[in-house]
Amino acid sequence: MTTALISVSDKTGVLEFAQGLHALGVRLLSTGGTARLLQDAGLPVTEVAQHTGFPEMLDGRVKTLHPTIHGGLLARRDLPGHMAALQAHGIDTIDLLVVNLYPFEATVAKAGCTLADAIENIDIGGPAMVRSAAKNWRDVAVLTDAGQYAGVLAEMKAGAISLKTKFALSVAAFNRVSDYDGAISDYLSAIDFDAVGADEVPARGLFPSHSNGRFVKLQDLRYGENPHQQAAFYRDLYPAPGSLVTARQLQGKELSYNNIADADAAWECVKQWGAGVSASPGAAAACVIVKHANPCGVALGTSALDAYQKAFQTDPTSAFGGIIAFNVPVDGAAAEAVSKQFVEVLLAPAFTPEALAVFKAKANVRVLQISLGGVQPDGATAWARGHNLMEVKRVGSGLLMQTADFHDLKLADLKVVTRQQPTPEQLQDLLFAWKVAQYVKSNAIVFCAKGMTLGVGAGQMSRLDSARIASIKAEAAGLSLKGSAVASDAFFPFRDGLDVVIDHGATCVIQPGGSMRDPEVIDAANERGVAMVFSGVRHFRH
Image (cartoon, one colour):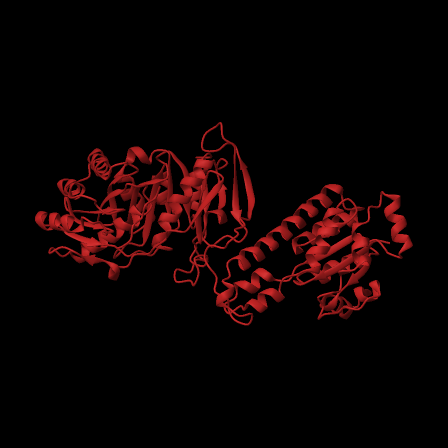
C-alpha cells in the first residue's frame, strides 16, 4: 500500500488533496493540527506518534525526528540490503511526503517580532524530512507547495507519478530548504546580539555578516549585453509591487538583456511621478524615453499623448529604437503617435483595446504592462514603495552592496544659496530636472523647462563636456535653453561648469553642494544673476 505522510504549517488545499489520496487507497500519516483537520473531515489518519511508537515531546519539537520516519523516506527500494533493514526493524516505506515549513519568513517580517519568536519559528523536523525525501527522489515524491497538489494527484489518477515529476519535486524541495535556510542566515547574521535580549525586538544591521542571494530564473536570454556573452533573467523570491519583474508581456519579441536593463531604467524613472500624479500643476501623465540606460527625453503632460510628444522633442534622433515608459494607461491616440517611430519596448500600467489594436500591426514591439496598484508611496519599507532595498555590483570575486538610490527630494529640502530667489515656476522646473538627473549616468547635466527636458548630457568624464553635449542636443532638436532650469547630479568643483550652463541659457540651477569651492561657485552665480539651490544630495550613477 502507498503511504503518504502529511505535516503542513500552511493548510491551504491540503484537505482536498488528502481526500483525493484517500480515494486512491493511499494510507495517511499525519501530525498535530494537520492530523486533527483530516480526522475532523472523516479521513482515516494514523498519528505519527502511533506510527513510530514514540510520543511527541518537547512541545512538539521532537515528533518526526525518528528512524521509523527517516528510514521509511531514505530507504532505496532497489537495494535489497535497504529493504531487509526496514523489515528487520519493522519500518514501513513512506512514498509521498507533503510538508511545508514553519513560517519563519512571515514571522520575522512582522513588526515587533522578537528574537525568541523568530527562533521558535525555525523548523527542524520539516526540513530534515524534506531533505530525506528529496534525496531519495526516485522512490519518494515530496511536495512542499500547495500549487503542486493538483498535478501530482492527476498523475496518480492516471497511473503513477513520473520520474520527471519526482525529480522536479525534489529540485523544488531542495530550493525551498535553501531559501528557508538562507532567510534564517540573513536574519540572524544581521543581529547585534549585545544590543538585544531574547524577548526583545532585535537591532538588525542593513548589511548582515553573511549575505545569501536567492533568485528565481524567469527566462534564458538569447545572449547578454553582446552576442558573445550568455545571459538569463532572474527575479527576487518576493518581488516588490510595481517592479519590472512583475510585468506581463502582451506582445512582441522575446526581451533581450539590453531591453530588460533599459526598460528598468525607464520604468524606475517614470515611477517617480506615481500612477498619473505629478508635482507639476495640471500635468497628470509622465513619459520617459531611454536609450542605452540614459533618459534622452522626459516630460509631463495632460495626457499620455501630450507627455510623449514633449518627451520626443528633446532628442528625436536618440529616441529612435528606444524604450518608452508611461505612468498612465496608453490610449489609442498615444499609441498612434508612438507607432510612427521605431520603439523596442513600451511600458505602461495599462493599455486600452484601441492602443493594443494599433500595436498589433507592429508585431515585434515588446509591450509590457506593469500594475502600479500595489505600490504604497508612503509605505513603511522600500519593498512596499516598490523599490529594491539593496543594489549590488559585481567586482572581482566579490560584491559591492549599497542601499538603493531612491531619495525623494521635497520642495522644503531645497536650500537657496544665492541672492536671486527662484520663482515658484522655477522651483517646479528644478525639482523636475532633479528627478531626471538622478537617472542619467554621471557626469550628468539636464536642462529643463515647463515639465520637459530640453537637453541631456550623460556619462562624460568632464561635467563641462556633459553640459556642452546637452546644449548640442537641444540645438539639434530646435529647442531653446534660454530661461531653462539645469540640474547637475554632483557639485560643481569649479565655477567653469556653472558658467557653461549659464552661457547656454540656464537661469536657475540645482546641485548638491558640498564642495570646498562652494563659496566660489555661489559668488559666480550671484555675479551672473542666476538663482541656485542646493539639494544636499548627490546622485552619482556609474
